[in-house]
Image 1 (cartoon, helix red, strand yellow):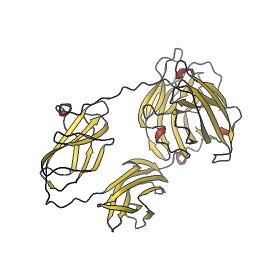
Image 2 (cartoon, one colour):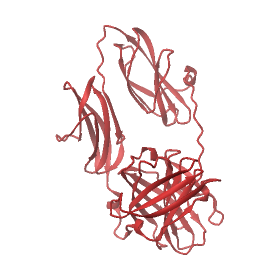
Image 3 (cartoon, helix red, strand yellow):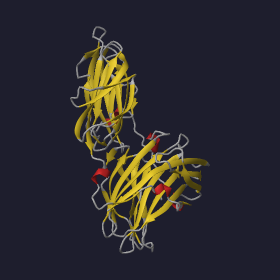
Image 4 (cartoon, one colour):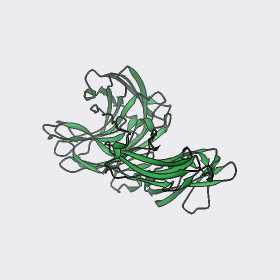
Length: 436
């Protein structure tokens, strides 16, 4: 189920007055105030929350010149300037429109030694990420101390074993013991320069390894013969969908994946569902599945991974959880009414997810833990995407008096990004639901 979101565009003025009354929150590590530099010089800066708001973007300008925008909380750039004294404005913008600015006075001289520039981006993992081993390292760079990068590598902590990759990019699995570690991402220039970017990480146990002894496991749910398809009427007036599902031998991990082919019109959503048992007493669940997005799946807005359970009192708990590309968040359902007079809504968590960032033609591992109490208050505890853990840990009312007989039912919903007619396929494999 889904309700449409409307996002208001955030317009931020880039004039000096936009920052006049806001305390700076940008830490500039290079250059330092009063430094004499050659051109181009190296700008390194990191933005912390701006007026309590998460960072949406950063930027910089010289004197009264135009602002260069960087869509990240960190700036690593070469900046050109004419000889003379300048004011370097290093800026940040919060997610709700706040603006922050740190000013650094510098002097540019033709006699100053040239600055060595290193450009390295670690796309994954993020600093301080929680990871299940093996996790994926994605990094690329262009220069190591102003030399073109020809080789990259990585190691953990003080290990002398470095995995070396030829070229200026690396996309590789990394294996590590659990605990806090430093991931060293290394690069070498074509004249022998060596550079190192360190990323602090926390390797955690797999959620499957933490299951209690009394866990009940239902495997290969994607192969059940009772899957059905229906349009989700909550996806908006005028929307229509046609859904067809069946088993597929390619692509697959297990030998039999389930294919969902949906034809959309009017930004509709198609809900696919299957009953896989009945258990009124279980109160904790781990949803574990693999998802494959073909290259033609770019028109998908949301993917929904749900579990419905009828409790002993007859009410149904709806554990609704989706990757929402409109808001770039993991969303969850809540009943803001009562079980008898429900009001089912989707709410954004602070955990990030956007299908545009999922590599196509690749299997992605999705794991979700949720639980409930006897009144039907659901707790959305943690979500793992490709072994990267996030912890919403949010509890909301989620009980509905639907009049159902005891059942366990899973929904897999596909929502369209576009209002025009479009068709797409998604594949689900190794769908396992653990309960205890």
